[in-house]
Image (cartoon, rainbow, N blue to C red):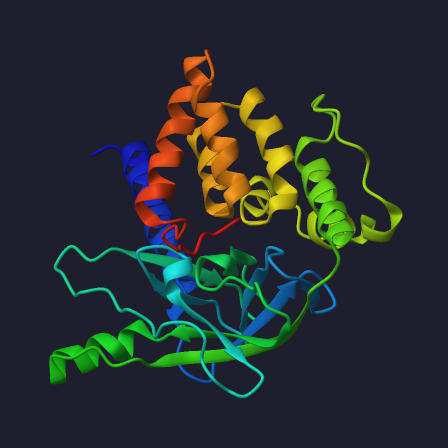
Length: 305
């Protein structure tokens, strides 16, 4: 072997070894109890909102160590957390967590947390587990599941046992509000979604302009469309009707059905008789779904960032 080729081979091997060493040094460890802190923020900001107003929870995992860590989540990011809602008397208002059945092909997501810093924010709608349709003081709680401990207990006991790495909570107060309050909120939410798209929605009133400032400007990754579809109130129907005539996607017709009121039913019935099949067909499907479930659409927790 020539000396030039030997030098090239030596440099290549050294480079590969150096890359492997760097990768090994940068490889984060799995987080353990006491190494992370969970932060929870409830939107609307200030911990106060109207009945039926969409409630967004913002979660962050904070690394308390000087080494990078990773946290394991089942299925996807949201599934790594147990979210629950409690009343002011300490009564749980949501169902206990339903743990996924163990399987060989069980999928996991990963949250990577830099040393001494917080993870990216994880935002999801609480309307998937509870509808804030009554005034009162509520507490939103979140637990970060410790899947490694749970898998070990499953191996030992053959039974899933909940274990958590960290917990967090925040108080949220709901007021009844007036019909005008709900109409103004509907206008603000819609204007955030369709700003500049020609729907003819009035600009948000100064009194509620903070919704955009605290939600959209401070958390630019929030999917406003999903938040809008989570406002299950008659005040939203006229705006949802506008959007469905412009954007013929099934989820907007389902949003009308999820309002679940007689007015929502009448709106879908009228839309189902439209001569435009792209309006009539999804409206008829949403109406059939609404009738089949008697307005009680299946709850779901969605990530909105």
